[in-house]
Image (cartoon, rainbow, N blue to C red; front, side):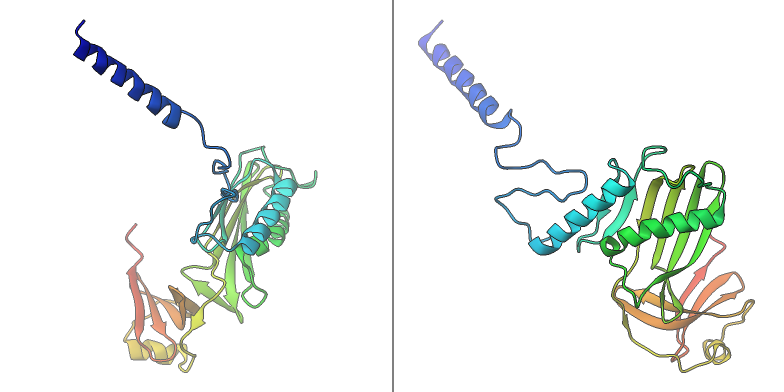
Length: 251
């Protein structure tokens, strides 16, 4: 073998050793792999996109307590501003409710869901002046789903502001989904009656109006919601301007 080929072989071996030594190992010392919930961070780094250290610590301890109470294998997802937006569990994997629990019993399902939301309230960011209400339960002998609507002074929010809790047959938490909005800047007031709003908007109506707070981004508008000839129509309760017109016949 020539001298030149020997040198090239030695250089290749050295390069392979360098790559294995520096890139083939696990995470470097002092860096923690991301945990399922996303609370754990490197002790030597801080990311500007996560809540500050105090908020992160409070969220972490809150989730730890929730996890211990409702099931150690629950996985949570948080928004960029640190609010809980979803939980995922497994059938039969979480801690059950009382022995008398029956998922087909609407009242039992609602009470169990309320118990869960009582503990998850701070993680979701639920405020006393923007409560969850209008609970509705649907269930059978296998599971139950309980739906809540965010309200402000008795008026429901739309199209956001909903929380859904999925329960197993023993009352174990299977899933939670939330698009609760803790802060909305309401930009108008109710100056029109439903009939006046309908007339101003020129909307032929087939159902009674429902007053809602229509949320776009961080802004909310008092509006009347109508069903008109297959369309969902939302009319500004102050000006009569049509905010949304959507064909509900399209799926």
